[in-house]
Length: 142
Image (tube, rainbow, N blue to C red; front, top):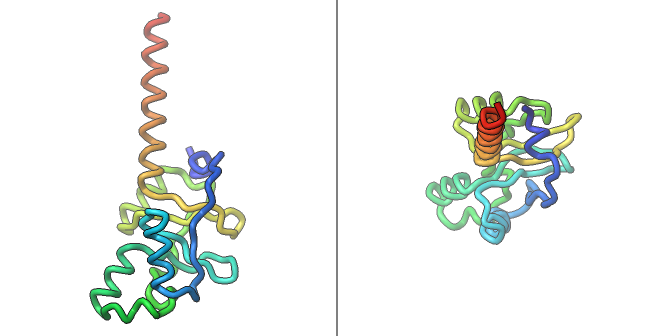
């Protein structure tokens, strides 16, 4: 069971920002789309992640003036990424070890998707429920 299966069929676009965007503009994107983090791109390549935590920490340390700075100055970088063929359990283990909640997914070196720990846990739960239902059906038919 790979990340590719988790992201297969996703229709929604990925909300991202550019490394040169202002922190204020990036914060507005997070708020508008009600998301906790987004990939940061530079020349189309993933270069970091900007999250609510990044925003909170930089405001706590520097005050509201940080809103005029560029995202590249406050983002979490470099981004920890996984390949699309990475096993879901391996990705969950990486997220737990590194204490992160979001992973950019790359295919052939190109940014392809963005998954959260919630996406991966939901996929695992759905799979476990489907397997349990198959077992119940097998027992009923026996």
